[in-house]
Image (cartoon, rainbow, N blue to C red; front, side):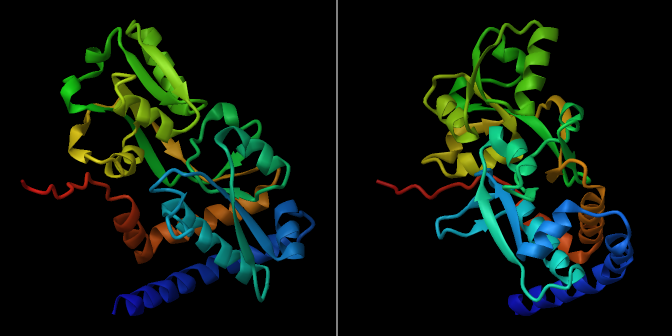
Length: 286
């Protein structure tokens, strides 16, 4: 029954997208060209960059690359195959470090970065962004025993945050403006930043709340942690990252996303990937 429902939703999605994508066929044959379209058409491959950032992009225990943003990019791949008239399109999932994503795009190692990318003005000189698909909110994650209830409770204490992220820039701004005297320790990954907090090396972790839930649920005792409701800093918009100087490809991706967001399938994706809660694990009684 569930498989039948999924097939019907996929069919509905394809019907919704065929007409708008047909409108894009004219620009593809016009004098303007798209390096990305030409590369995909000549190689019959689409290279998708990702990182271990559940629930948006991650490789699960079975080796399958999944997540909300990966699902969006898989649909984009389906529409690319149809629009370019390809019988087959190979999709390669390529793990890309946070610090390497711009070079990977501009060096044509990947065609889309489908992990967590904040649409920031300072980055638009190097890459292009799709329309945003999620508004993130930084939250304070800590051990319950630390009794941290507000940002002010962290004054003068040590916090961990992933290196190079927009979260770090926003936290540095707040630290200066509010004179919090925070000692900020950075790490290469969100997992490392979480472990610092879990091992009491820092008083708290500053991270997008939705990224914290999978980390908490993978721990031995999810109930030991708390995610504060207080927003830390301004909301940040997540988007798919693409190469610069390819407006036709960006327009194609944006149109495909627009159709996804307007289809019933999007509610199914949201419920599957973005409805995050802390999972209470059963404890054996003595």
